[in-house]
View 1 (cartoon, helix red, strand yellow):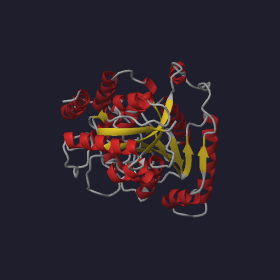
View 2 (cartoon, rainbow, N blue to C red; view 1 turned 90 degrees about the vertical axis):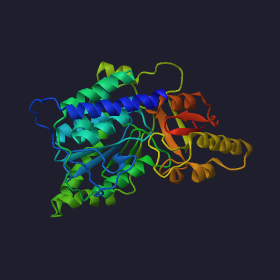
View 3 (cartoon, rainbow, N blue to C red; view 1 turned 180 degrees about the vertical axis):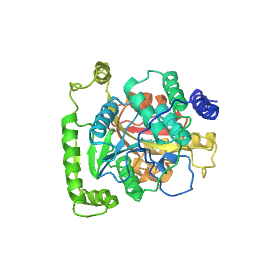
View 4 (cartoon, one colour; view 1 turned 90 degrees about the horizontal axis):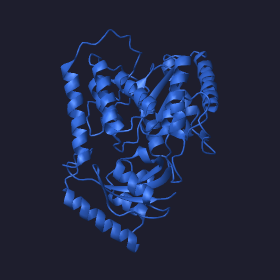
Amino acid sequence: MPRKVWAYCVVLATLAWACASKPPAPPQTSAQTVVVDLGGSQTSARSAEARLPALGAATAPVTIVALVAFSDAESAATYQALRRLQARLGEPELRLVLVTPGVGESGEVMADTLQQNHGDAAYFDFAARMFDEDPPAFGDALKLALEVSRAHAQDSRKAGRDSSAPIVQAEADALREAAEPVIPALSVNGIRVFGRLPPAQLEALVSAEYQTARALGRTGIAVRAIYPERVAGNADRVVRREAPALASPPDETAQGAALHAPASDAPQRVTASHILFAYQGALRASPEIARSKADARALAAQVLGDLKQGALTFDEAVARYSDEPGAAQRQGALGSFGRNAMVKPFADAAFALKPGDLSGVVETDFGFHIIWRQQ
């Protein structure tokens, strides 16, 4: 059994044991949390897509959907800035929804497990600790997950109905499937933000949208209709970071500054696309996939040969062969990402490529990949 698969099994089994043991928990006054319920009893390999973790009221005038990666320094800074804004406005006024890329980074797997076992409060507790501490090793992240599991052992996973859930899901999908996806990325009541904004600029954007949404509420519109109306009104608004963020802003800790400092002359981020060849039993593989691991490897090698010979284009190969959900719509694009945002074999291969190069067949716990680096 591959080491990474074994490690994930340990995570799931250990967290399940922590949940079952239910040690006495001190009385807690938990923050109001709302699980976005898409109303289905359907289950899938990626249940996080059916129940996006949310912190705040479903009737909040502002909902921010944030696409982040737990091991990405810019995601950490963006998350911390958002939580400061939420603390200032209050959870009844600002709802925060977290979305991850779905590439199986270890923190993502642990967070999904905590949400399934203990609900959204546990998910956000784990996210805060991950972003604050930036655990250097898998074992350190696992230790955080176990601490969160014990602290939330008695939490209820009950979720209220949310009429805006389809819109929230659509915004999450739009960030993931953008033509040039970037991490972090936000949807602020439908205003798409790609890349980390300086805290002052982000605060100005959110504050302006909050005032507009509140003004709409004073017209007599139902509170549950404010968010859908604002998303519709902001449909064409896009904000992109024009230049890389400067050194850590003054309000960040010394630890945060260290996270953002470049370690070497090596590229800190790359832009790439990939084709995934999953197999039966691979991590998060669709139940519909019946091919064996050997067949998946052989297919990947065959497609790689066709690409090198010009028998088909990369976009054609993605549309025809990739097993990643939504890959055909975005041509397999992963956008810009840091090394720690991906599982190690994938990141090592992607960062070793020169712009324009294709990788060989790369194996991860999700299957086999062909990676094309653009930048």
